[in-house]
Length: 70
Image 1 (spheres, one colour):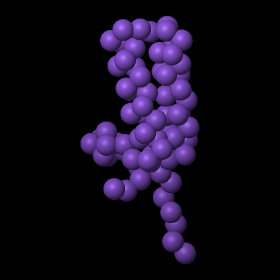
Image 2 (cartoon, one colour):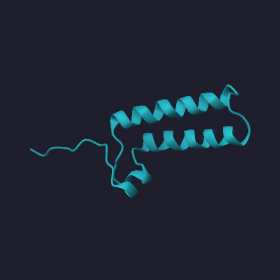
Image 3 (tube, rainbow, N blue to C red):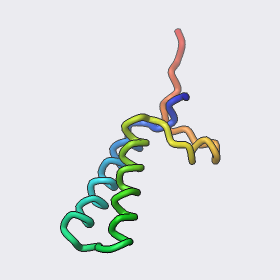
């Protein structure tokens, strides 16, 4: 499993995850929609922390910088 999530992408994912979790815990979004947002928040955060996004593989996206060999 190669990393395909770069640093900027990781920061954006964490910020979105915190925002979605905040919406749930402040009861702005409740019920089934709130639970779905919370699960989505966890999934986004986990993929950012691990550095691998399965959807990126499907679409051929890679936001990791290319390492140059000298």
